[in-house]
Amino acid sequence: MEMRRGKGDVCGNQAALAANGARAAGCEFARWQMLLLGLVISGSGAYPQPGETGQGEVAIYTGLAAGGVGTHPVVGASTGLSLSRYVTGLFDASYSPLGSDTLRYSSKLVAKTSRLYDINFSVQVRLPIMERWEPYAMLGAAMLYNTYQAQAVQPGGATFVSRNDLKFGFETGGGVRYYHGESWGVRGEYRYTFSTRNFSRILGGVFYQFDGWMPFTLRNRGRRIRGAL
Image (tube, rainbow, N blue to C red):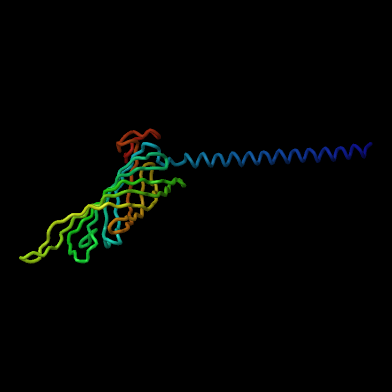
């Protein structure tokens, strides 16, 4: 009888140990679940990355154009509105002094003081994969307006006359935003333009985001005035 009780005690102890081990494993699993849930919640709310529907943006940038129109500096600005968390529509205008280069394909053309104005509408598909970094891809249509002085041979000799060309283009590329603050940051972009002469641009600038169309309005989240120093 004592031996039977000893065996029963051993079996009972083994069952208790197994139950305690299962309970401990369950607690550990629940603890990991809570930890992962906390990381997801804190990651989504730790830094209020913009991009909600109806959020506006203004930006200025500069860079370099190269390719079919030669190598020249570029300056520009853009404004737009987010259509969803991941899609933004932008209106963009830029200027580049081309010197003796033009959008025309002509080896006989002699030009000077050429200027290129790029007015385009593009759509950006944004990928907010990190807290401060936001890569994006862009696609758009452009109107390219090129003014220049073209050499014309006349009976009295060669002279320069004013000319202008209006071309249409297709633009694509991509870039990344880096948020320095809640509503502003820096942006780098590569853009390729298909037209009568194809060329690419490497651009960098700063952007500022706000609620709606007015840059200096009360912020819905955070209750502070946007644009305040």
